[in-house]
Figure 1 (cartoon, helix red, strand yellow):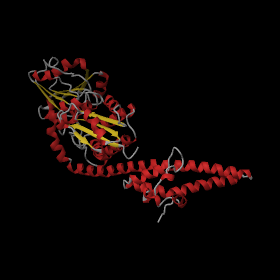
Figure 2 (figure 1 turned 90 degrees about the vertical axis):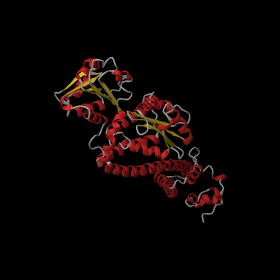
Figure 3 (figure 1 turned 120 degrees about the vertical axis):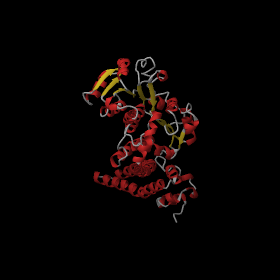
Figure 4 (figure 1 turned 135 degrees about the vertical axis):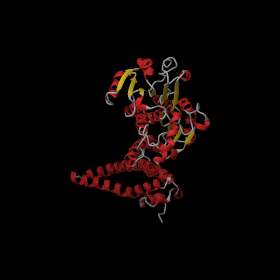
Length: 446
């Protein structure tokens, strides 16, 4: 990590984009996306998050302009007015806000935290994370958990699945209805759970029937399971359908639904589970994620106090993250400084011990000399170490760069001292340098 390791981000989300716009960005899955981003020249780290309501990507580069160029290509298929570009601190804050659910369609929903963790695991497995994004994502996951444990941000409607069930309730008397949930993943399970509390009967359909049966078994006797091959029959029995699979192609189309009759369908999958041809089937009413926006205003109003508390948590944790980066950058320079000093110590100690051994040197005497050398290094570098950490806190990279030049870890000696000019050495460094070194340079420490 260096002081020039900058995070750039880009976001296309429900706040300004339609589902079609978001899908246009998600032509690759998360692993393919991060691998392609990392392959671009100048990109040191890469992360991508794709959900029903957002497509986001983050890269680490030496120059912000390079990061923006790479990400502009990533979202090239989205309308320009739906794209939000993020600078270094904006990117870090966005990750924290996303993890806490403040950027979700359903404010405070829980599912996004699991999606973020899955995306993190994907990028880590792909080898596209480094110290900058790894720290940012781990911090985001921590803050997301903290927001939900310390505030009421996730009380009430906490997922798209439960939001879909609530929307269905506005269109149909669920106590007499049969609800069909297509997909037994996290979203589908949450939708099935919500329907199990309000609908007369619930059918869970999944590509792997065993998974559907597992979900059904946990929800009660009025919940049954079928495979996707049974969909043509299942849709004729259902009054309400929620689709939430991870399929790359539609699982419901006009042909599947031609005998469905009056059916209210909510497609909360990305990519969409319901083909465009379904809209032409008589009696079929298809809604998607855009239609869930009607629930967000009431949700936001009821959670505004909790949201304010989460904002305070984010502000505090963002400060901690930025300070953590600064400490790490300073520690890299400090490590180089100690490495150079240790090599110099070892070289000089070897010379001194060779001379002493010529006159006879006991093991105890050797240990005393070695201990003295260790103590000298520690004491001489203690003050410069603190100065470097202070400089990092104050973003004084001139001081840090100068210190890195003075102690070249590849050579083990203050390699730049012979050519250094007094006015090139920052006060913070000069005031902490040993007098013998200053004398060698002809520099005053006044």
